Length: 180
Image 1: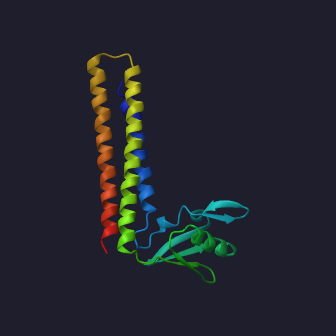
Image 2: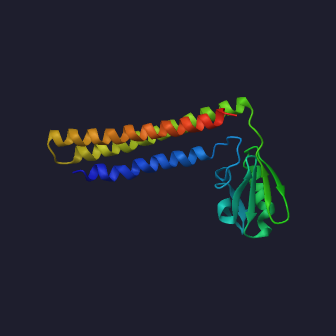
Image 3: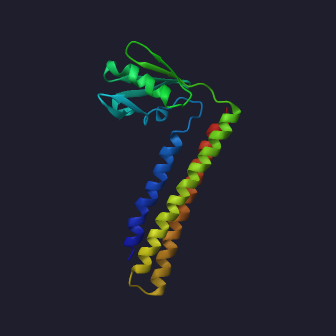
């Protein structure tokens, strides 16, 4: 009977992970490899994630250094970063691509803070969908009212815990964005 709750726990954890990954892609004005990891680059006749083609490191708070595994991909990597419309500048050096992360304006910071809240709301919707699926499974079970009520409360506790984690993530991102 508690199998329903046990199968839902990883689904709620996945919701938090998805939102955490999503929030990491929001620029904060500080160099972070997460900004570039999921950019797709045309290489070897196909589209590949940048993280599959190069190492990404932050040399200081405003600069990322992308070192391609194959130097021939440096130009394609620089072009992909420019085409991603992240507002980043690229400089192709001999064996690497230097990416300059300019500081954000206050207006842009506020815009990104709203985006973080939107992503968090999307996570809440995913959590409610997982809850809905769990409640359906509980309803289909052949159990008494007390057991059903207990299971529903356990599922709701998981939802509440997940929503709390999502709000904390969004709050951290907002704080990171709005502090200079």
